[in-house]
Amino acid sequence: MRTLLRRRLPTSAASSKPPRSPILTGIASAAAITSAAALATGCTHNAPGPSAVAAPSAARTAPRSTAALAGWNMIATAKGAIPRFAAPGREQDGTVPARWYGARSSLPVIGRRAGWYEVRLATRPNGSTAWVHAADVTITATPYRVIVNLTTRHLQLLRLGKQIMNAPAAIGTKQDPTPEGQYFVALFEQSPSAGYGPFILVTSAHSNTISDWEGSGDAVIGIHGPFGDARLIGTRGAALSHGCIRLQVSDLSRLRQVPAGTPITITA
Image: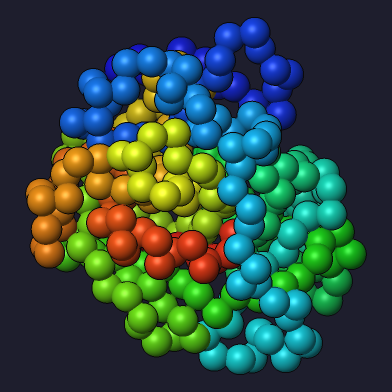
């Protein structure tokens, strides 16, 4: 495993070499995937391309009272590359990209002021937030929330605050743990191989111990299939990945209804 080699911006120009996926796979699967091209097929984040998976339609246009409705979470989708601020009224301190690894920037709203929204960001460091102008985003809402409990090694899916799934999961090892914190569903991608399951749910979380997975320039936490370790995951879960979260295929399939921007909590 190579670390700290380089960082590739999501919006960088296409290279003649096939890009590598920044999504972390499990320990057992890393040796099995020997072809960079095979790993890149359907797993690269440089452009949506033919391998991109269409976004689910679960998000709904948010009514003005959405913030007061229990169980609903607001999502702000950038209308383009938009300015970001450390606080309302401050000077601009950066830009929220229109797309992150090829997908539109759909970000959970965590704060509101007149004419402003505070949102979570998909970029490093983990936990990054920013304020954006309300006029620069489109607001929708999701009834879903994902919770990953690292102690019980289970993933919960909530709808309007009620649990609709509680599934065993494989998480990171002690050497490469799954990072705790508040994140969100960044995008969906088509699986490059059967081991990933029907799709990959790419989160906004990044490994705290790996900064350059397989020379990709990043190390993004994904939620995907069991990579042949369904038996090890069993009903109690296991610790056997480089940080990604692995589910049984039947459980992973139930996450397809969750739209980008849906909050994810990873807790011990």
